Image (tube, rainbow, N blue to C red; front, side, top):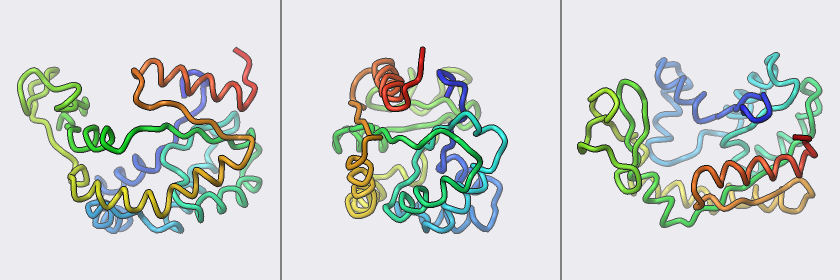
Length: 201
């Protein structure tokens, strides 16, 4: 994260990287993600452990999309001290209404060349289906459908909601309003991190 000079580690990006490279992990993950299902905990935990063993995490890091299950959260709490010494873990939940989430996910379109992201509801391209920047076609992720969204929300309710309660019970948790303008959301996240970790400006 640029504000603190620490890396953002996105399990989704790592998984999609494996999918793009056609690895065995990527093939297995794609089949599950297309159905809106979560990748098994052990695979994700191993992937995160390998990333946290890198040299660039000494000053801290942002885990994006992890942990998503209580088992992953428990694993992280148990294994974090084993990794190289880093600051204590804190958690921030970005709240967004389910109807707004549906609009954001099903409306998402990505340029097939420059990867610029649009939303056909809130930030549409000038010409439907075409990137404003380079004129390339836009695509929709295979898991950005209403049916996949419904499955993801079921998984959220049963698997991810308990993670929020797990961290809410500690003194290392904050929530921010994810429906505010992007700049305001970013400012709220930074303020929460500074409060939780007692960062000095």
